[in-house]
Image: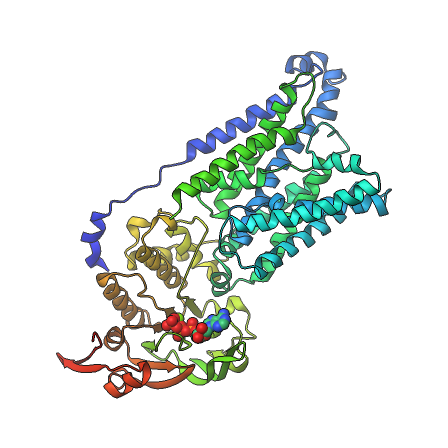
Length: 339
Length: 252
Ligand SMILES: Nc1ncnc2c1ncn2[C@@H]1O[C@H](COP(=O)(O)OP(=O)(O)OP(=O)(O)O)[C@@H](O)[C@H]1O
Ligand SMILES: [Mg+2]
């Protein structure tokens, strides 16, 4: 169609501005915040103290046992929650879903309660497994509900999910109350990294592995995001890819739950911000979502440690406030663009 | 060939494709015409394994659609549906690259990229390649979808109302492209069209459906007759000869 040159001239080429500087910014923030996270806290762990004290010093000990594990956990949790949100948004084809708005987190929490009641002595990895299975059931239930109630309106889908989560959450609280386990429940429903230390956080690496799996299957998730018909036409086994996605979501949710507890909004806000900047091609978005998710939680965690120094406020409070504000902004932005 | 044998599809007892036996995808371009609700899109859905027939068998070059691995079919047959809503924010270039998925499984080779580039320039999409789909007009988006299917580089290409949303010039351009795909690239194109004049001008063969059945199947010139078109559409159609070509007049 060479005859069309004249017409194309009237629609000037608009090159997408390069986004490299944003990537550099995220990278720099990641390093700076990770550094801060290592050296901010009640005890004096400064680079100077570590270096002058040598490997046997208190500072070095604290760094190895508490600060490094905490920082690693924060980074992995932030990255993997962002990815869980991204994958879920591709599966449901809705920008407003994440484990926390679809009942998946509530199902996983119920799973944790079940382990305490029936298998109190179970190892953490077992608890996580049970929570993951419950999370998987939750994802499945949500997908069934969305299919059965074909809601056309974008914001109704997460509302359905939040209602589902509300019901499951209420059931969980009811049994926890009856069995006098509300306190244990509170441990997970409020996300915090205060108790993370060597020997008690390693399961979060499983969430990290899931990020890797998501990256490997990135193009498949992009194609799934085009919808079942496009995916089938391109020869993809739609159901299988959805199943893999569900497992990724459930395992990440469970791993984060046993390590740090529930952290709201992150899986929602981070992929949406990335989508605005570079779009939804999963292969391209994954490093961004992971990086930005890590930066977001790192920032919130450092903030949670310093606002009432020397006390620590729950991370979920900081994330909740910042995340809710960002979420509202995204919603309003979308509203103003509505056709 | 795409062969349908006794294919039937029902929705809640209503038969929308009724015992259809036909071979599609011979050399050149085939136009599928028929009134709204005739079952054209359903037929495409069945061939493209997006729907499952209640009875009958469909094969593509001997491969049973119900049993052949989906990714194998995807290198032979591409279907573009009538209404395409893509919620994901993808660029035109991304979308066309996904057309190569059946060949590359995501790892694009130089050869894949050539196909992508060719499809983009065939559809006149170079100026829009880095635009997000939600930043395009309806017609530009339609062209992006067609480019994706073209990049898939299959022997059979099924297009459901590809002229949707296109302006006069781009309608003609797309039909010429369809013709070129058949003539230069040897593709077998089957396309649903509502404009019988476009169908008669660019297609070698016209198949008409009505109430789930094939009611006419002949070279374009033989379908372009008042009595045939009236039987298909239930409305008076005048056919005149202009410059040696039959032209249907149905503007009242
Ligand atoms: N999912 C469905 N459930 C119930 N009925 C359906 C469904 N999809 C299509 N139909 C019905 O099947 C019939 C054929 O539909 P189809 O989309 O194949 O028509 P079409 O020939 O493509 O029409 P158009 O020219 O309007 O696109 C219609 O009567 C339609 O109402
Ligand atoms: Mg149709």
